[in-house]
Image 1 (cartoon, helix red, strand yellow):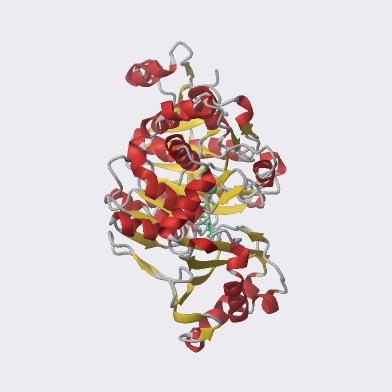
Image 2: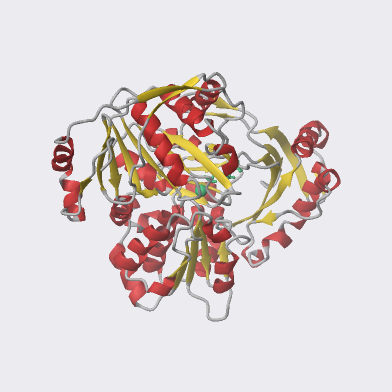
Length: 579
Ligand code: VG1
Ligand code: CO
């Protein structure tokens, strides 16, 4: 045993006892005398590029590995949040390359900054929704999540870090702005000296006065899921011969999926694929969409395809839903979940309201109207939903970018969405395709697609955006084929709870018939710029619902091309990714 921390093994405790005997464990751990720690204050110089984007600070691993880069940002977080002495922090990540090293550094900085306790996911792993669950369940002051979500990992890949507040959700803009301001002025950080903290065994360690508790977050998260969904009904569904294929894409949800689908729900072992988390995601791109999850897509479109397919992303907050030979757009998935929520145990009392990000299709708006509940439109990024959920204004939230979630945590939640669908399927005895098509017949179809142009030179991408904004006055009221422009704007949002205003959240071209073209630049990339084009057209006529989205949207796509001059300005004939 080294000089700086002591392990109290919990192997004598059963899992359930582990949680109910929390205070007993603490007492045992504290029987050991705290050791004197050697704190150091290290002088540093600011990096000027530590501005958090849509979801935390994301950079190349190599950037994070520079001396003091991570340390500066973590100290800036701690300076910004001003946690009281002795506060508890949650810490974990998606397991990507550099996760373990970063956790060791953060623990030592946390100890030097006066935290009393850190809850760390076993092996340093916590999916984003599980981290949100842990922050809420154990009422920790906040949490640090290490993830670059669906961005590729490995030594040449991406790394990321974000701070979540005590409600379990991403820090709002006023906090991320304060972190950025501090990061530009930082002159030193505090750190303790320590040997490596073992992260793999459940147990409690002492690092000076700070306690480190390695927790089994798979258990906490699975319990939460079991409280929301009818596991018996889903078990019966699997017993009846229903076949599923879930692709964890070698990212964080593998262990969670094993516990929930195999152990608790009795699905067969071959229901899961790519469930071993790897630091480089098996050299893949853990983004659950038709392009990057093609291995799963091929299975679901093969002859003897399973009934249901699903995937989640690097940090487990995104989901993709597939039926046999059928893809459910995330916007439709949100609408179907909202329309069927009352069938599901945890939501049987109905929904308080729903919220979607601005570029997400208005399919859920139609459901909200029918249910006579409020529907909110927020800027892109989950951080804008937190206030609405905390104020009990909404139960469900969603984004077109494969993110769906509810007020059970304050993050989008991939496995939650998949379980929601399984629960609906167990009750309705209809196929995924039937459920979606009947939904369209009832509410009309919001035909939707997103085209991404990745890795563009930044000046060219901003040039496209500026050009579109400049043409607003000349295109308003103009007629393009069967479409008439109603209005154009740069979306701005005023939070109805705290009054904060977020401007420049995406360029909207709105048409008289409700169709929309939206352009915005991504805030999660680490190289060049990604230009996103979102397209939506409403089709009330069920005789036309079977049409392929790209064909149905072809006229809007050419209008978008002509207004934006994307092809001329970028030299790209086709988008990098279409979802
Ligand atoms: C993208 C998505 C956005 C999502 C964000 C974080 O942001 O469009 O809807 O909230 O990623 O998701 P951007 O700025 O690149 O468009 V995740 O799973 O990457 O944390
Ligand atoms: Co993610």
